[in-house]
Length: 311
Length: 211
Image 1 (spheres, rainbow over the protein chains, first blue to last red):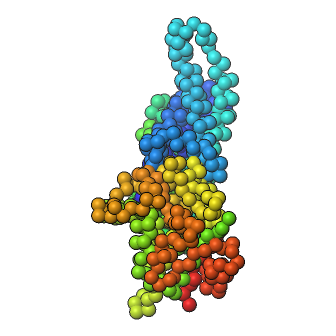
Image 2: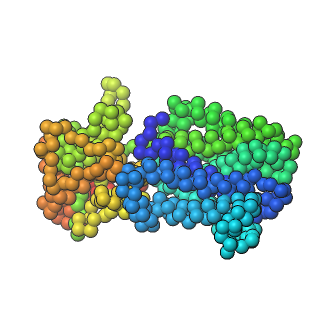
Image 3: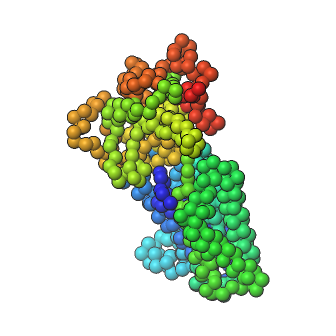
């Protein structure tokens, strides 16, 4: 597909922003529900909290590379806080609040899992306390950060959906899709991939996960179908955009990578896992990888299929 | 303050491209090379589109010259995160502050009329044309958005370069708030149409449809 105004860098940013937010939500969810404490070692909490901030930071740096004046005169980035009418400005505010919280939460989670870090630091800085009230601090941060994470995921969709000039984007389905996809990629990364790789028998500790994940993948398929079918029914350039995704040059990517490997395969894996109360090591890893890859390509296809209204 | 507007009579337009050339010279619009043009990155503050309907032998071509529409409700101003795109007070025009523009291209995405152009490359002009550059229009660096200004530098003389150059007199320019002006009268006429009116942009470029 031809890139017009926005291309890969923006798509990758939208993807990393979503996955970072989703990973945080996973970590916050296992913390707040107490699932994190059902086992000695919770890879979902550790990976979710650990990667959230860095993923979003990488996305933000990519975005700065994409800006025409981002590197030449970086102080202009500060101006991006100024127009409160602009969804991009909302995003800058949400990110600026969410990023530090995600990083602090990640550091606290790592310190919580590895108490020797604090002990090591204490040898050099004697005023440090012996331990921290991790659960109490994390609970507060998980709630505040969780709200901001949802804000981050939704705003990446609203950014596009307010654009009347691009009928494919101009629908509230898009923010909903991006939010669901954010949670789904977060689950794919922190549960399917990380948890399976770290503790293959991990599913025993989270009985309901396959069901929850199934619901999210189903919802994602439903919203994607709603987006494309309503665009087709709308006719005009909206339909042209949808046809570009469904039948165009990149349609193989859509059908094989996104729908096949990224949605139906993981859905089957989780249906199986739900029925059998477990899934295999390889299928867990593959379904996680599929979900993450689908999250990236869904965003790229939607960004690249933007056809503006005809004059 | 005046509400400058342009009226373009599609019955009179011959598609000669005088406006495009005059605009390019007046506003120092960079010449894109072949590579940029192939990538859809050529720049035109004023562009002339040909809209073809029907199939041979019943073909109808409509020629649509397109400047910036200086909308009363401009989507570009709303989305610009840095406030580089703004409605200028003195003349009510939608203008661009190049020294503020961050180059995010959100405005270019948001403009339904496609009037906004991004400087993907260091701007270039053929050596033979450089001495003709207009000193009253600033040059724009790589990495910022630019677009038609209705020749704001010529105001208060209300004659944008495209209007002056139009060989068939298809373009009119004036103040929509002046009840006596020619544009007000034409804009009220039965042939007056505004493009993509349902988007609520309220464009101040009005076309007189063929008929």
